[in-house]
Structure formats: structure tokens, C-alpha cells
Length: 116
Image 1: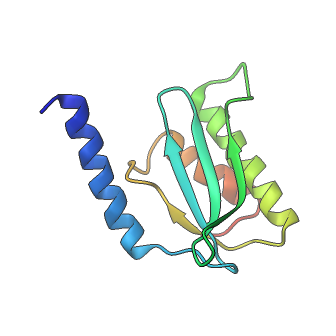
Image 2 (image 1 turned 120 degrees about the vertical axis):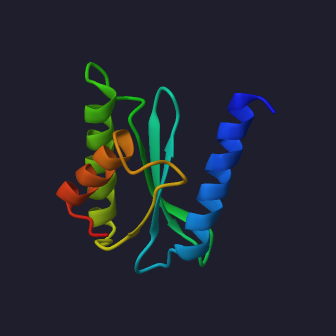
């Protein structure tokens, strides 16, 4: 098995473990994070209906480090969530370690007004 396939498979297993415990509702949606090599993406998901309530990415933000862009993306997501009267969420790190850009996104969302 190639190294990249093994890493992806292990992340998918961790992701499945997290998803078995974390469930989003209309009152407390799931904040799902995906981290690629270039960008980070975040969504607020209502798992009851299978609907995305709000989303954010750092793809449009330029001139900063990846960690600072992730923090800004978290603030943008929180702003759009607060406009929809969502203040409480459950955090789904998506199989990624809670460090670096994932942690920065979570901190930015907290600064924007979301609670985990």
C-alpha cells in the first residue's frame, strides 16, 4: 500500500470515529472542517435534514499565512452563523489533529461568537 493511501485511509477511519459521536441538529449544527494542502474549508451542517446552513473557506483571502487565513475563515463562518441566529455548535475536526490550521479555525469561530 502506498504511503499516501495509508494516510488517507487512516484519516477516514478517524473521521468515521468522530462522526459516530458527533451529530448536528437545527439548534446545534455540526461544524465540519476539511483541510487540504492549500486551503481550509468549514461548514455548518444540520444532519437531521442533511443541509448545509453556512460555509466558509480561506481560498479568497490573500497575503497572510495559512494559519491566519484559517482564523479569518472561522470568523467569517461565525459571522454568517450569528446572522442566522446560530450560536452553539458541535465541532467535527474531520479526522485531522486539533492543531495548526484546524485549531486556528476553531479559535476564529469562537472569537466570532460560536460556542462548542
